[in-house]
Length: 174
Image (cartoon, rainbow, N blue to C red; front, side, top):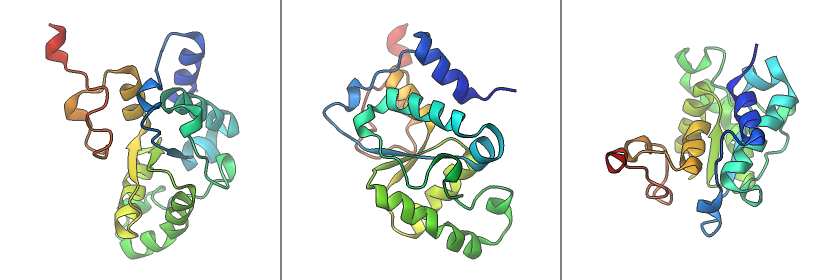
């Protein structure tokens, strides 16, 4: 069994996928990364966490990546997985997630990249609830931005700082 993050890293290493971090050279927007429990800690381990970091750094620039502490297999759970996001125990879920929110804030990153939809939804809600003022984006959003193929209608979770960066207009390709 393989995970898409392994393929992203492999394709970038092989030159089949060519994201560019040039868009972020002057902006210097800082990113951190949530290690999804199911993908990293419970399944593929640190190897896939390294692949995810490699791919993200290729997209945003190594100098613009700030790792959380602890990280990879030792990273904290966000509190949204395992059905907890849909459980109806919102107050408990947000309280559990306080650790993750603090961990993200400590990085000083403007964006937290989530590799899992449950993580994305939970961390987005944590940022709003605890006034984290950081954005939460799916990895593929940043990958598409770095490839120059992120359309204007695919920027829901980007902040104003990135909404106009590398906008792909499919109608201009016709």
